[in-house]
Length: 291
Image (tube, rainbow, N blue to C red; front, side, top):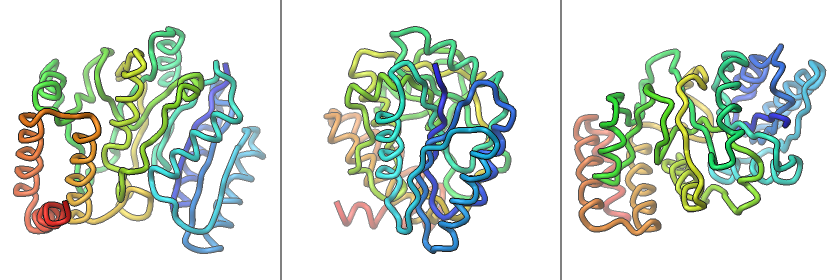
């Protein structure tokens, strides 16, 4: 079993370099799959330099660096495509963001232990913010059993990112999976635009539709720098609320939510917009007008 870390990145070569350097000394990670887009040739060269340094440190790096911007779901799908082409079924792909910091092999070992069970499709982990995000915190309710129960009742995905290990319906974007799962046609749905909100939820739903389990393992975690600029997912609060509404609407239609759960989901998003003030409200109104 080889372990590769898949990282999409946009215009954040210095952050990606910091992310990859945090794996120095790892005895579990063989290498990286890097899909990096940049706005300028100078930024692209910084990506190439970062990859060269990591290779010189003894890691394998499979990469696709280009000038332009694919967007979140397309960049992540390119990571998956490179994994399918280059990894064996028994190898493990760990899905990372470019502003994650690796805490050490002890955390990854917990995820690998679960993946020895063929019934487990993916293992999700904690994402620990090193600073409070100014823009659009995640939906989380760290009360035992309550978040999972509300997710089932309302159709809106509310995460418990503290308690476990436990089997769950949805988990965080930090995931580890055997490459074998990718061979079954699992991929990010590129209809999730903008920030890619719900892209990982959709991927996890596909895994469960295959009859595989999703396990949340809190001892598997990454530190999150929570950068407020650059990156495929970054935008201001108005834009983020717009994409929350648009992408969650698509998610509900795709997975055929009943009318009651749709109403509850819209109520949650509306309340969230009202609590976050004028920019969020403008994003909600824009999304409703453009339905």
